[in-house]
Amino acid sequence: MRVVCDTNVLVSGILFVDNPRELLRLCSSGTLTNFTSPELLREIEHLLIQPKFGLNEELYGIIRLFRDTFFLVIPETRICIITADPDDNRVLESASSARAEAIVSNDTHLLELKEWNGIVIVTPADFLKNFFVG
Image (tube, one colour):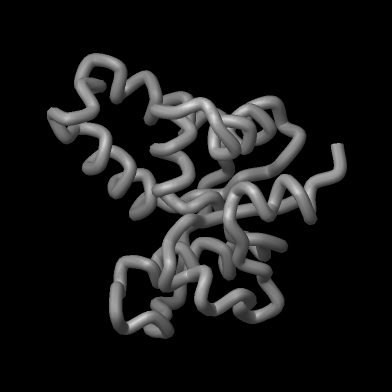
């Protein structure tokens, strides 16, 4: 299944053991095909360099793992669907370019859409419960 995991899911998967970690495991094993974009990778890097996470030395290894494991898309079209948080549109752009079947996110603005252009938008828990058969 083709998915785009939002940056909040990826960061949670790195830092905590829970549903986001299971999603990362499924993506890194090739069970799920996760797509990302350069902008989403930059956002993850920006989030992880914050002192509160203490991952400065590990950051480049994590980003390299994402680059090696995830499929990179370069969105050609800018989308302006979510006005309350325009950065969330980068997730929609990536999902559209990847022809993803699902966006997995904990972001309220994305989750409020529930579905966009035939792409379901769900939390990690709902994705694992309702959409992943493995």
